[in-house]
Length: 352
Ligand code: ADP
Ligand code: MG
Picture 1 (cartoon, rainbow, N blue to C red):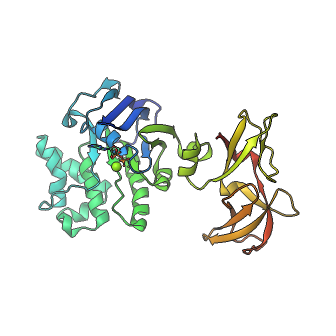
Picture 2 (cartoon, rainbow, N blue to C red):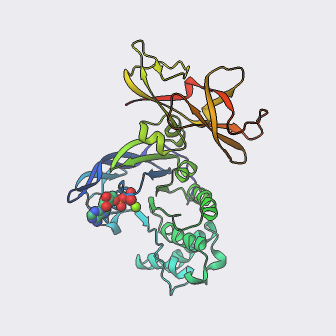
Picture 3 (cartoon, rainbow, N blue to C red):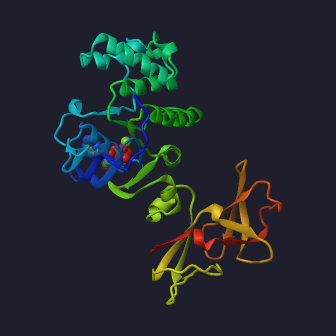
């Protein structure tokens, strides 16, 4: 296994992929290119079709329509065992009566690889996944995180071209999950295999992915790097789903300026009529001397590095969330009247 750099060459092309279960459309004409060696995340709320999409890639579900191309070759009709893709199940599915080493060897023995090749591969993957010391243990003698690593090692030892992971960290507690997020990323880098990971956790996707796709009701809403999706969400759903976003309803004037009650902001747009301005908490500042828009602090939350002020303004029913450094020189308290300014260049406008 060698470390290879990213390329824009797609390893996997998903072309108009479609799946319906009777009246339910689980995956709705999704087209996507996954690049070689990238860590790609499929993100969306429960029921949006993530698992169905992954199962079609792995060959466990037959598409109703569309094609799956691996390195340019249509693999849509191949059975799972003939696809150079490996799906790691959420439930790990380890053999309880076998040691870690035996669990890892199983798939390779089934493939009738020579004994010394099997031994070599197992040693190599145990080193990469930090499992050497557990080689002789059985799954019930391991912690949740260690079991997860065994499942991962077992999927990787077969050297698939693409590893598919369906909510791989879902069963772990928060602390361990955060550690495994970084570990997975390191591992992916080390083995140089393309990873496609499914998650419903937007933070997890932002932390791990080189690029991500956001799905809703089976439809692909946006595909891009975490930065692109966070900074320029394609629509209101994505804007709301990724990170924290404030929404302010308003109208666009004849000359193309967004107007909302006493907001005092200059944003020009091609949109006409009713519109919604979206702005992140970190793109609003508390101003001195009455510049910007007046508001009243109705709530405050301390997050260590920063503080989030909930500020009621005339233009919005929901208080604005404003992120300020926790050590800000001017201390604020609930009930204070302050002024806030929105950075017009860091806003998005959506047509209502
Ligand atoms: P996710 O993994 O994003 O939570 P799924 O792919 O599991 O979503 O499901 C997408 C939709 O397809 C849901 O409405 C689900 O109920 C439906 N679905 C999934 N599998 C089946 C099936 N085997 N039979 C009928 N409906 C299914
Ligand atoms: Mg699922």
